[in-house]
Image (tube, rainbow, N blue to C red):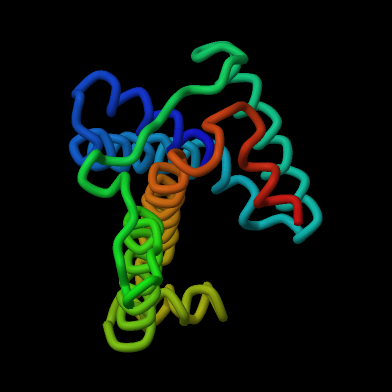
Length: 183
């Protein structure tokens, strides 16, 4: 989430376009996520739950320091697109920020698409089978290792979407992921 927000903010500044920066930031975060899953997290899959929690918490702390080394300790500025900066009148006398409506709409769309993916597709069936019983799913022909990488890539993309869209509302700063992950 934090790395995605930083990448989106950096790429928005580099491109001058919120939408281009968001798309490129999502793609870059997917790359970081896949690299992390392939090099570090695969080693944790066969360990107990506590080891996985401690390992991912250690990654969070290292990510905080990595972001501090690359971007510094000062928060980055990320502004919403100009077209969505103002309020929208939903009912006479009732206005709501347009950018927050976008976030609500994206959240609903993502939830619907994830539900459809998990419950209505072959990939979703294989992911559910691999999560429930890795050995059985593998023996039935599912590439569980590849599916787990795909799921992690999708999770990284969702984190970048969240970080990039919430960046204009919250500070893009070191440790911003802790406010979500720890609770």
